[in-house]
Image (cartoon, rainbow, N blue to C red; front, side):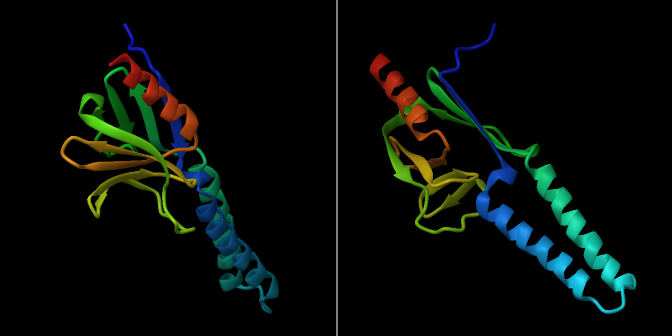
Length: 161
C-alpha cells in the first residue's frame, strides 16, 4: 500500500540555465577554434571532438535526476543522486515555513544537503525556494520550481494539525 503524496517535484541537473550556458559557450568556442585552425591536423580534430563531447554530456545531464522533493503527511523527503542519502524532515518539528528567494547571486551551483551558515540547502535550479525552520532553529532552504504548490501542500498539512 502506498502513502498519500501531497506534493512531488523532480529537478534535473541539466536544466540549470547557467550550467547550460557555460557548456554551450565551451562547445561554441571549440567549434569556432576548429573552424579557424589553419592545418586541420590532429589538434584541430581534438577541438571538434571536444565540442561534440560537451554537447553529448549536456544532453545526458537533461535526464539526470538531481533532486526529488516529496511531501507526505507528517514528513518531507528529499532524495538526490545515486550515492546520496535520503533526507527526511519531520513536519512536526517545523515551526515556520515561508516563501523566499534562493539566492541573490545569478550563478548558483546545484547542491544537496549543503550545511552552510546555519542553513541546510537543497538546490538544482531557479530562483524560488521555501525556507523551513525547526524547533531547534535549524533552517532548511529547499529550491523549487513549483513554489506555490509546495507552499500550499505545507499549508494544507498545517491546517490538519
